[in-house]
Length: 181
Ligand code: IMP
Ligand code: MG
Image 1 (tube, rainbow, N blue to C red):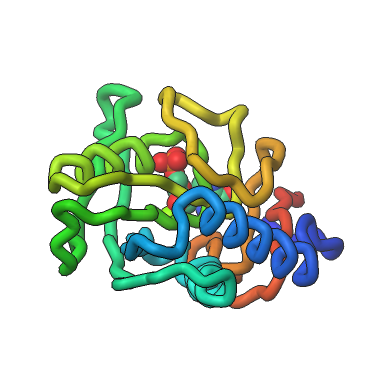
Image 2: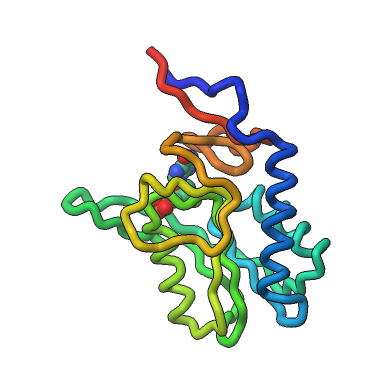
């Protein structure tokens, strides 16, 4: 049996405040002059990206496209190396563009590493990444996100776009999945 911890790990007001801070930082670093392409990793990114895009807009960012990649990672059963299965790629031509990868969480880092390499191969001017959550204890790669909302312990979390077997993405806050008897 699994259950959700009643007390949120990250409340709605904390999410709102932190997303706004992230947008402010990103705009301070990247400027308002050069257009930015947001590249979200579905499905986990969708709530965070919707809020982040509007926060970036409020801070004066010039977002020329919001696009998505759908992929899932799976182990091949033989090694610990993960393979990434692309179901849908960006439609935007990112050659010469500034790209910001948007994801819900960086865990082992295999996804962010593979997506970064995949996008770099398309000749962008620059690729940066932003994740709402970071679980550094779980890292199996040397990749880090450029911008992190919250660093958390090794807990399985849901809400604000993150799921457990497709459930709980609609929770407006982030909470912890707990194993019960
Ligand atoms: P990575 O390749 O191990 O970094 O995997 C990142 C992906 O695993 C995220 O985009 C999520 O879809 C999923 N994931 C990792 N940790 C959690 C969690 O605590 N809750 C929900 N999904 C998670
Ligand atoms: Mg994901």
